Length: 242
Image (tube, rainbow, N blue to C red; front, side, top):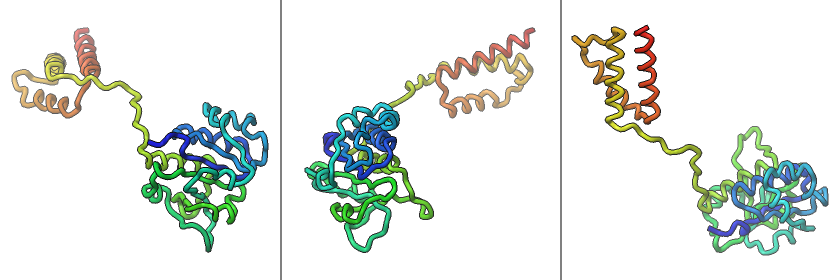
């Protein structure tokens, strides 16, 4: 997998410090850190309180971000630039859905940059013309307006998946499945309780217990769940005795 900083995210003429911080956060969760701002409205945007607050743990991305005067300067060292622009144009690079294009890019041979326009005006034609491809995030036809950081997050996710993605981290421990002996022990326990409350006639049991056996087998019970079932049986038996 290419190094995290082999991909560059470029934000043009940003107006809101909070969007810059949120974009940095979107990048970091996908493992990217190379952020360049081109002529932001606020020259100290990277240290603005709103940017730091919205970065929420990604202040290191802000700390190493760079400010460039022009897009040409921001694209230094980049071999394949992707514009993100919704406005239809009669001339310019071809437009692709992100995933379709990313499947064709050789991340080991190319240094890729994603270029995002300003919140108010998007990208100018001249900026789009500097790029090799234009990305169009598939959205509902009636409303396709994305917040800047949302667009960064979607592109960063799809690109990370194209690079191989990250493994899902388990949040809960693996279950301890009940073995056959534990299931049979619970069935014997329940049989005694069902006889005690008169639900099961031991003289004519029919197929109640085998059916319950099949039910427990289909349920795929854990050891803790077996303990719960036996605890319920004990409570019923104790109440019946009283």
